[in-house]
Image (cartoon, rainbow, N blue to C red; front, side, top):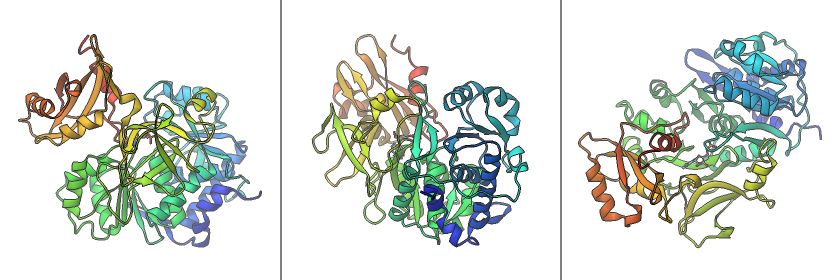
Length: 498
Ligand code: AMP
């Protein structure tokens, strides 16, 4: 074994075509693949000089920049394990991650250095700001490393899950977990070096770091690299782009912009959405406004991408399509396959599925079966044509008076009511029922009343499913990836019935 499995595969295009633009950014010159790879190998030399050994973790909490992408490649090249951390994490959260992961190197924003050094234990702390400046890049010389040999099963990254229940867990991802998924997605979504992909996602999460970045690296596509989501910058980028990867909120925000027209999207071939469910209404509006049908896919930190709507063929709103080539998916209830069309827990198996949770063998054993099936915790069903739909997270399932209520069924019904923008259905503690169904509804029309929603629920739903209360709110709480924070809603209204 002399090859660095992931690094050599992610950089094969760039090594053979160094002059091609890897990334363009507003107000700066394009950066080539050759420069990106060279910078990565120079950064890898800095990491090695600071003592990084194969298998060591490099914890990184920095603003989005091309240098941060190069640092990811540098860590992989040096045989390290890249560990990106959400920029929103506070000192007490960081303290947990840095103690748990025991990184050899920590890279943080200069503004947080004083706060982070005491939490970093014995790690070497470098700084890196949003412009790529800091002690990390100050240490660069012309020296480069030869990539350290690593095999398909060696770890390349640890990504902590968002930890909505209990402690965050570090999902261990191997070289082949990342490469196999990038290769499958490149084929499935037809990425080539002709593509220009708008990259406006954060790079501490699987979507922006792996899906968008790795696809561009393996296919030779150019990134329109934006520091964050800004409708103005996306509108400016669309006329020279071919593709966009976003969370549903990108699309709902862009739909509010009058400049979104078919002409603006004339060079585009693909709009991808994932990380959170997209409303059927958003799909339909996007179609009507741009002439393009959004392709929705489903994945998670632990598994990379699992399913995708087809590239050719019907992209069905409200579904996440079929398993990607090489990925198996089944719906289970009590360790049995459910009948066709029934709801159960989604399990997946394939080269995309992670190696377990960092230093949590019991958690790993609870969720990863010995034969490779991963219990995702998502509830889903498969229709007669093989399209998978996500019905919600298992923990969002409501059990009221002994009956199961799947929030998605109610949310779809409520979202279809005139004057409703969107909704979130949650279970709240209730003295009689255990949990009571509550619908949190965001009106699109200020004239909407709770009574109007109640009338539809009474007409269409079995009594046990009908919301005991309907709350009208101006918006739903969401995280940076656009996921509705049902836990925040449950916490806020915990005492509604008690
Ligand atoms: P994360 O690990 O942060 O990427 O979150 C993964 C979770 O996001 C999955 O387990 C799903 O619950 C949810 N998710 C991702 N993509 C979709 C989608 N297209 N539709 C519905 N839920 C999704």
